[in-house]
Image 1 (cartoon, rainbow, N blue to C red):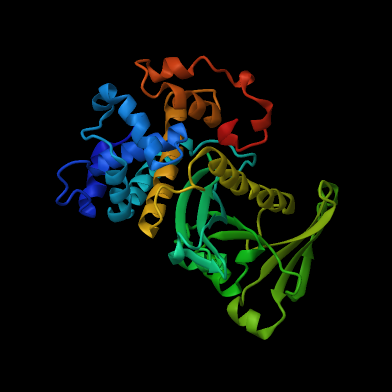
Image 2 (cartoon, helix red, strand yellow; image 1 turned 120 degrees about the vertical axis):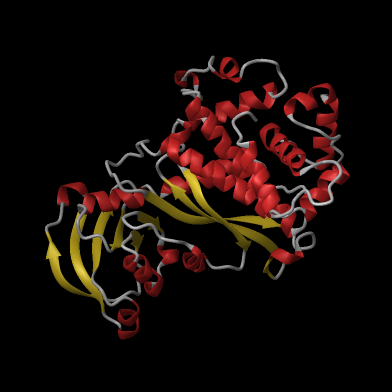
Length: 377
């Protein structure tokens, strides 16, 4: 917890009046309890209460100033504004991005590269009626913009399952010169043109029913799998009205998948091979979703209200980013998975964190995690 900027946390609490009329169990106590649940894989509020009470003699030194009761924690999750923890997570994200800004993600690009995607978290409709998704199903979506330098989630938007992915483009502020890599579910030419007008670049796949008119062709790098590299405009008048400028269409043969892929971008400078490799990097966001679902508590929730769900998701994200910050600042050559496993059994040990984690070298990591995010290897 020494790696957390408590002053910034207090500013977030004051911004939304989180401790207004609170006599005991402050927002900081709530955060510590929920972070403990994430780090030690607790299953329920009763589980959190029992484990923390078993170590009551050490709680004060960990920063707790109140006794943890499941009813009090449940009430706090339901009533205290989730934006407190969302804003605090953004503070940690800014810190992590500064630490990982020079990390390599496989391509020699100076520009920032973001991968955009969403994951659906299934819920019970009877317990979560506010998250109605289908006739007999409830769900929330976690839309994430992932900075591939360090695989840090820079923007996370939690919505009901009904919200289509492409609508999230309306909520993003695009960074000039940056690349936004996304799948064809985000293809909406009016929104893509807004990215273009912001002097940012997008890389996506074209839909099969999209019609183009070729203006001219560029030399194709056939040896690297590029079938064609063309400068095109949209054929249909309605689509051309939405995106009146030129596009670049690259057809690529993926030998591993045995498929022919068609990429669209507004970048006319990078080589066609780099564009294809950029799209392949989009898979990092899929691995990010898989990892946090496996190793953090975001599939089973401690509360059923919308506020409780968003609070738990944002605290889970802040814990993920916190562990990434610890890894970088202590210069640990250890995966995030190993760090989480060690922390889960040493949280209340009077051992320097560097001493507890420094015994694990990268060559001792389990092979099953070698193909995960660069941040974890």
